[in-house]
Image (cartoon, rainbow, N blue to C red; front, top):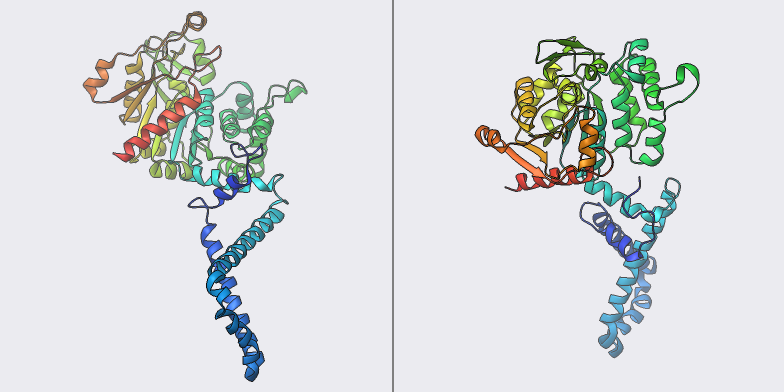
Amino acid sequence: MTAPGAGRERPAWIAWRLWLVPGMGVKRHGVWAVAGALLALVGAVGVTLWFFDERRADFAAPLEALLVSPAWSRYGGVLASAVTAAGVALAVTAIVRLNRSLLSNWMARPQDAAAVLHHRLVLSRGPRIVAIGGGTGLSLLLRGLREHTSNLTAVVAVSDDGGSSGRLRAAFGMPAPGDLSDCLAALSVDEASLGRLLQYRFHRGGELEGHTFGNLLITTLSEMERDFGDALRVMQRLLDLKGAVWPASSMPVSLRVEKLDGRVIEGESTLAGHPGAARAVSLAPADAPALPEVVDALLAADLVLLGPGSLFSSTLPPAMVPAVGDALRRTRARVVQVVNIMTETGETDGFDAWAHVDAIQRHVRRTPDLVVVNATPVDATRVAAYRAEGAEVVEVQPAPFRQAGIALASWPLLGPGPHAQHDAAALARALVDWWTAEVGR
């Protein structure tokens, strides 16, 4: 794990100060070490007196002479304090060097151990967050949230039937692994290397072409374990993640979307090819089971996030798994819906912000505690590019939210780049700050 600033030299006193931060568990052990040393000293004195036995006066007389001398009266306190300080410093230095010696077998820079442990401690105290969805929106959100908490659970839609995921799903009768692989990469501590490995896509090799390594790894583990849930459990033990990633269901499910005009579209991969807004989404089979880890995480959560992401093909499908939907209705967590910045062809054509929230209420039967929308204007270049694909900026009318008594937060969240996507860091920071303020009320 690389903690902030671990790659550069820091003054020694900063590293020492981090060892003394509350919760590191170092101070109490240091006190016990000093107490042990003092106890050993008392014991050594006792053994010495016992050894001299009747000749104790030969041992005690010089010491007594020192203690009643004018020099001791004048400088004894300073000398004793200096010796005590030197002893403590020597003990602490020995402990630190012993730790460095042991940690050098596991860390390239053992001097960064304090920073790494402190960073882990801070993240472990963050809110328990469950993020539900799939696609690019969920993986981007996880990259922002992992800087605030390690108590993260991603519940991922596994209904994709196109591309690499679709091919593996058809060949092995397993849930779609694609979004799971992306989320595992997003929560990887060393995303620069492990993330690149999981997301590497083969561009040649016949049957390998088009597949990502992460998808193949999940498939391999699924075959070895004979259970998709067990495969994810093994994979998360192998990877050093800031959180956990689980499929909404451990069995393959298919998407069934009903359009406003009554058409019914089967399969997620064909949805974008049928323009027009969606009205409802369901899964087949309708009684798909959920992993116990998903239900437990939802019931124990402080904050549940719905979106950003494709509303009918990423955000809603996990909630259509009966046990997941039930846990969403029972959880005491604050539920926050993050509305997409742009509409999506074939799903939310013509939807404003309230239509997104209405879809959540109709399907999940749980009203969000907060709805988040973007306040940053989308530049003309990006608007034109999206308009060419049949998408528009999602309009926000506050009146329906006021009438429904739902809190509406308008935050500047537009990220850079050619796509009108949320700034993951800004969104995560705003969500955690909001939750912190809510808890502090």
